[in-house]
Structures are given as C-alpha cells and as structure tokens.
Length: 163
Image (cartoon, rainbow, N blue to C red; front, top):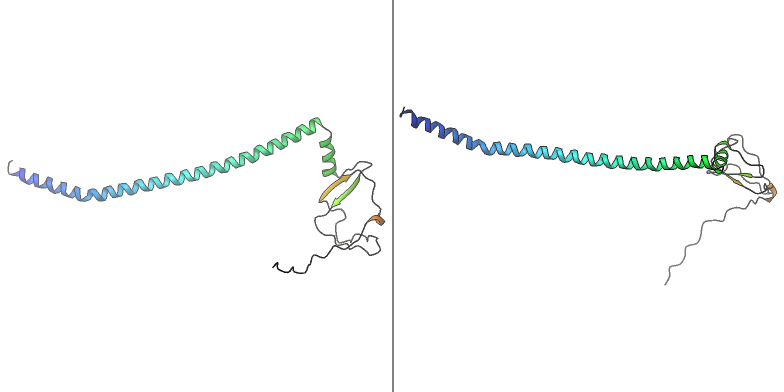
C-alpha cells in the first residue's frame, strides 16, 4: 500500500492542477451568466416603469373625463341651462326671439354681388352644413344691411434698413 500512495498523491495533484486551470473559465462563465441575468432584470424594470407611467397617464385622463361627466350630470339634474344648451347644439333648436348665426370653417363658394344683394347658395353644396352654432338675442339682419367690402391687401413695400 505504500507503493500506491505516491501514485495516488500524484493523481490527486494532477486532478487539482486541471481543476485550477479550469477555474478561471468557470468563474468567467458564471460572471457572464450573472451579467445576462442583471441585464434582463434591468430591461424588465425599465419596461415596468414605462407601463406604470402609461397607466398613470391613462388614469389621469379618465379622472378628468369622469369629473367632466359628473359636472354634466349635476348640470342636467340642477339647472335648465344645460338642457337649453344641448337643445341648441345637438338638436338645432332656437327660442322665439333668437337669431341663428352659423360660422363656417371653410370659405364660401358664393361670391358677393357688387350691388349688395346676396346670390343663392349653389346646388353642389349641402344646404345645411353644421360646423358651429351660436344664438344671439337680436332682431334678424336685413340683406341690405350687409356690407360687401373686399379685404385689405396684405402686401407691403419692404422697409428700408435703419442707419
């Protein structure tokens, strides 16, 4: 048995030497694995923060919307003004002594005539386009009272440079 002891020690020494050669590679691979796990965790944290910010923004918008709806409900329950406003805007209703005034977003295809009379609405346009409505407590205007002046020119001569 004494003869085998030096051989066993030699084999143990070789095994330990092989293990020590592989130890840096094992540590490097373990470090790489930890770095990948850390990167994945950071990415998930970033995505979660982004999702939380988006949800907070959506919640804030819904809070504002709910407050506006609650105010509408209170107006409809308590006052007559909200009912009148909805009748004007959604149903096109006006009171007896009110005048309906419509503001167009686009310029009209109808051109004013020089003698002050207004021409008829062309047939290719809708008869009742609804863009904005407003009511005014005033008597209706007569066509002869409308002015047909041309807009002022927007061109101007260049100004000389100050000295």
